[in-house]
Image 1 (cartoon, rainbow, N blue to C red):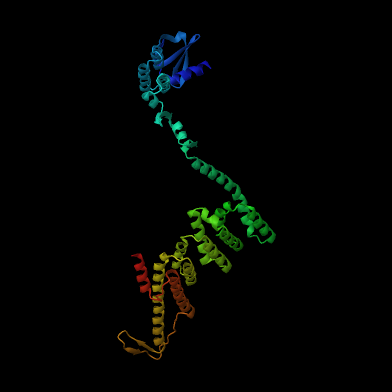
Image 2: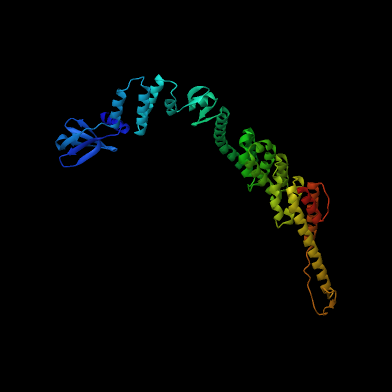
Length: 405
């Protein structure tokens, strides 16, 4: 216990003793303490014990703390200037606790002393000296996690923490139930849905969205239908979560094999009614599949957004050009079949009778799909804009450009 007390003393004070050993070794800036027939030498974090027979001389010097105690003892309690000078002396010599003691002696005598109050962390507030904590408390703030904040901020943080804890609790249960919703065992599937129905809707949305990517069609249909019902909770979950749901549902509308699931996903999107729903569909206008593009065009017609107009009239122009190309190609092939070909200058060239050509016409389904898509694009443009420029892509572009001015 004695050694611990000495170590604590050394931690608070500079040491200046000097000891010379009979071996000739001199140890300076240390603390030498007599312990019976030995001396204990404290220097740095450790200590060393030597017998008195090994010691030639010990020179004791006052430590900085010893000097402070002498100076403090010479001052009267009401000597404000003296205590103020001593406090600054302590600061210069890195004795913060001693400096604080001096400043407190000063305000005990002169409560309005600005130097002492400022040094102790006080500030003027409402005509009184207050610490930062007292000022914050006077402003109605509360301390939470080491920071001062409005009570509402603290309450919100506590509520979010509670929600996170509750969410962790719900996660395992929701996941377990979702895994069973798609079961081929009807009883297990019903039991899972009943269990989910009893859980708080607030904690379902973020776990339902990943299930939209499930390979199980029964589960995908269930989740899409549930997200329609949970539209308000989806919106409350925040923009990032909402748009994640919208993108997944939009992909289902375009690519899911099941008509029922595509329909359920579309209804869910309609219920959620997010401002960026059209954005989620635009990427699918670039698909190679004409059927996928037409589903996209139908969706854009329902989720009206002028941002969809430029991609649509650009696609309209490409589609019409492709149709023209096909028709021109078919004319050329038809001429070849008749054993003649028309050159660019209008000259007709008759081909040899023994020349046999097998025509590679575009099939009727391809032409029909392109014509259907052209009509689908025009219908979408009409629905979005309330205008009708038919298949004239240039007029659709001119109208849209005029709206931006």
